[in-house]
Structures are given as structure tokens and as C-alpha cells.
Length: 375
Image 1 (cartoon, one colour):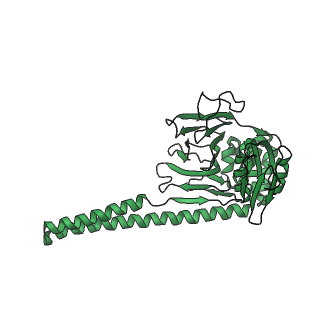
Image 2 (cartoon, one colour):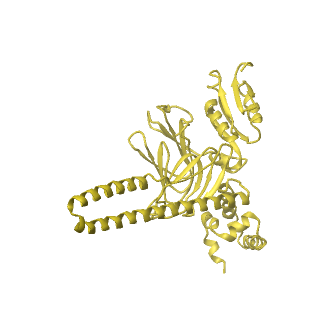
Image 3 (cartoon, rainbow, N blue to C red):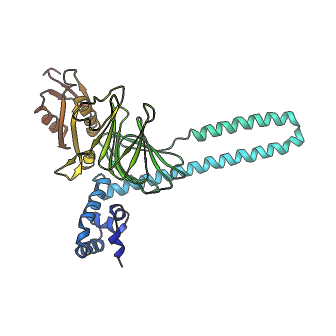
């Protein structure tokens, strides 16, 4: 009866309602069924555990109630967005009908009046098209210190990191599935060969058919990244020359912006061409969590990989909703490490052990950091 489960891959389990209830631990029948099924199919234990781990990663480790609330909010607002589109189409139909009536009136009022009417209607029609084309797409975003998980109408699962903004195109899922991201997101893209999924960011466009990937592309940061966990993607660089790069599983591309270029001999660069502004690197797995470093933010962890204090300050600002002011004498400090996201004081105290600095925290959540005590 349930023999089809033997052919399931990770993504198939994630689409099964019974398996989801088993992951959430909210359905005694589902829990009993899957425990017994695993006992009868011990060879499937690894793939089931991977699917379960991936489910919680994609949920951003949110509690079930939080996930349901985020998804319900998204669906409600997206439906309102669609209804607004229908109203605009009705307005266009009204304009077209009015134009036909104007033609008929030509018989009564003559050509001069017809020219005036057509000119007015053309002006209205152009304004209507401009308004339609300029109609804002649906946007979902997170505040500093907040994560949010939800599904798009095509079934794609998304977890947004703090301080991120995701915009869904007005005609999403019609011919293409296009979104725009400013920030960081973990995406499990629903497979649809006929409707490619395209993520636009300030520095690159990422085209996928069905895959799991993490994109970090804050417009305020000097570098952006796409990390491929499963599947295959095509990355198109916006500068220079719209170069196309294919990423394979367990690879990531790092793109430097603002004229900054990666040095070919750098030990951290991985594979890159001379004088390029990007590099392809392998993903690094965290031994303790059995997950790649690039998605540990979904487990409430902060990962620094030879990052400058300027980059770290930006991450801390988004994670803790604070403002950090760095003196020039600490901006060049670099740190590597993985930290549980507890209090910001604990993070700063840990960083002090590597390169010493002083800091003060004001009541308005403004943090000043320098090498001097009087900061």
C-alpha cells in the first residue's frame, strides 16, 4: 500500500503531509506509521533523517505555530495582491469599452470631436498602462533580529534572514517565477521545468529549475554569495559583461562589489580567474551540526570566516537590531569562528579574546567599539 515511499527522495518526503506531521510531532498516527515504516525499511533511515533535518532548516527552526502564522499572513496578503490585479484589469476593460462608445459617437458629433475624444482616451490609456506597469509587486520582509518562513504560491519554501526584503513579481508563476532579493534567504525551489525560477539580486541573477540554495545579497554589503546545497543553478553576473557561471552541489560563488577585486593567490579564493571580481569555493560543513556553514544562521548561529570587523558589525546589527560604530583602528581586525546566538555581549567578549578592543553599549542600543578605553 505504501510501497511508493520506497522511491521517495528527500524533496518527495517534504511534500508529504503525513511526513510533515511526523516531523512536527503533532500527530500520533503519523508518528506511529513512520516509526513502523522505518523499522521495516532500515535502508531508508539516512534519507528520511536528511529530509527531516532539511525540513527544520527550511522552517528556520521556527515553532510550528510561528510557521503557520507566517504562511497564513503571506497567503492572505498575496491574495489581496491578486485581487488588486483583477480590479486593474477591469479598469482596462472599462477604458476599452469607452473607446468603442466614442467611435460610435463619431456619427453624431463628427470628426473633430472624435479626434479630441481619442486624444483624451489615449492619454488615459497610457496613464493606465503606466500605472499597471508601475504597480508594486508583493513584498515580504523581515526586521532586524527577525527570521520568517513561508511558502510561495508554487510551493517554493523560503526562510528569510534578518533585515531582508523579498519581492514577488506581479505575474509570478504565469510564464516565469521571478523574485527579487535584497538580503539573505534559504530557498527550497519547487520543481517546474516549464517555469524557471529566477532570483534577481543587486549583483547577480540566479536561474534554477528545482533546488536548495542559500543566497546572501544585501545591497549594503560589499560582497554577495550564492551557495548551492542541492541541484544545479546558473548565475549571471550583472557586472562585468553578464558572464554566466554554472554552480554544482556544495559550491558557492562569492562576488565582490564596489570595485573590490579578489587576489588570485589568496588561500581563501578557491577557483577564480585572474583579475575577476568573483570566486567559486567549496562549501564547508560544520562538524558539530552536520550542516554547511552557509545555512547555520537558520539554527540561530553566527559564522565568521576571516571576516573583517566591518562585515561582522553589519551581521551583528541585523541579528540584534543594534547600531555599531567602529573606530578606524579596529576596522581591519579579522575573525574566524562559529558562535551560538546568545547575547551580543557574549559575542563581543568572545571576539575580544582574539583581538582586544573596548566597547560600550548605550541605552539606545548604540554600541561604540575602539581600541581605546575612552570610546
